[in-house]
Every structure is written in C-alpha cells, then in structure tokens.
Image (tube, rainbow, N blue to C red; front, side, top):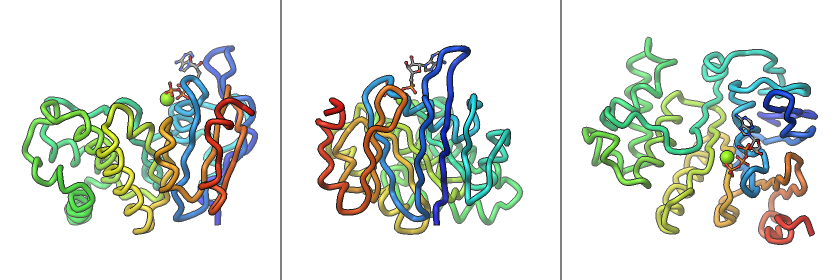
Length: 235
Ligand SMILES: Nc1ncnc2c1ncn2[C@@H]1O[C@H](COP(=O)(O)OP(=O)(O)OP(=O)(O)O)[C@@H](O)[C@H]1O
Ligand SMILES: [Mg+2]
C-alpha cells in the first residue's frame, strides 16, 4: 500500500513556479531516496508534504487521504515527521531536552515519550553517551544525528530526512544511513532527500529530480542499476 502519494503537485514561491507537476508514490515500509542537484526542488517537495508550504495545485495523500490544508502540527499527529535541512537543533539545550521537544505532540503520554527516547538512543548510541551535553557543542555529524533522532521522537509512520549526509564524512554518512535502514526495518517508512548517491544501496526506491520535475524513478533491483550521473545530466 502507498503510504504517500503525490499527484500532479505544483508548488511555487509567489508567482515563481518551482515544482511543475510531479507524481510519485512511497510504499509503506520502504526507504525512498529523492536525489537531485542544488535547486532541483527537493526541499520544496518535502516541506510541502510537511505542510509548511501550500501547493498551487495537485495533491498530497497520506494513507489514502488528501492532506488538503491540514497544518503542519496535525500532520505530525497523523504520523509525518520532518528532519529539516541544515541540522536545526536547539544549540543551548541538551541533547535530552532537544529530544523531548521532538515528542511535543505526545507530551501528554510520558510513558510513550520515555519509550521513544529509549528507542532513538538505541538507534544513535553516540547520542546516548551525550544525553546531557549541550547540543551546540556536538560535532556537525552528531548534530545531524540529533536532528534525525528528534524527528523520530514523535513516533512517525513516515520519517522525512532532508540531506542528512551533507557535510558528513563518508563513514559518518554511512552511520546515519544505516540507522535509517534500521528505522525502516522496524516499520517506519523513510523518505530521504540526498545529493549523495552513496545513499542508494540503502534505498528500495529512488527518484531523480531536475528543475522541478521527476526525470527518473527506480524500484527494487533497478535502484542498483540507476545511472545517477546520466540521470543528473538528463542523458
Ligand atoms: N523561499 C523561497 N523563495 C523563493 N524561491 C525559493 C525559496 N526557496 C527555494 N526557492 C527556489 O526554489 C528552487 C528549488 O529550491 P529547493 O530548496 O527546493 O531545492 P533543493 O533541491 O532542495 O536544493 P539543495 O540541494 O540546494 O538544497 C530554487 O531555485 C530556489 O532558489
Ligand atoms: Mg534542499
């Protein structure tokens, strides 16, 4: 079953169109990677799914129902969580406090928050060792892990990660991708925005975006054979 369905989505900033009618699905339980060069429209796509941007036309369906004008907070409650571009952690708060804020939508269920905290610290052991450290003093890679972990705190059905690997060493990028693969195998569907084709071995589905349109889609075995360079060049 498709957990997410995007239908003829057109999004722009003011009168400036950025997405020119894109269509794709993400099946429940899979890892989907959305690739594309700078300015292709990846962040525009995922912020629209999270409800932070309103489409000009087209639809976003989650679990079969159109999200329409549902605000971001109720999308989080429905099970959509976004780890935004650029490691936006709260720098003056501790790792633990950052994580608790990620569970804001569940704040009335302390037992649930505690369970989720245990789970995300298990996904990211490096954060477990640093639970009381001030987030602004974490390394770049650790802050990226914290941003992903915080997004997981709302116990989402769909976790969207916008460029987790940006600025990370190849080793640390792998650590983050491996954690997302584990998250997916535990039942949370993952949609990852990436510029780094190194994420492809972790993907069940790959989409390539160029200038606001999708130019390639690969599923299953075909993901391995995706010629990213050709795709990027539109060849
Ligand atoms: N707030 C905004 N106002 C006007 N134009 C914007 C705004 N945000 C993005 N754009 C434009 O929309 C286009 C797509 O941007 P977007 O951020 O979606 O790309 P991206 O694929 O995420 O790129 P990157 O890999 O660099 O993050 C770009 O041409 C960008 O300049
Ligand atoms: Mg972006």
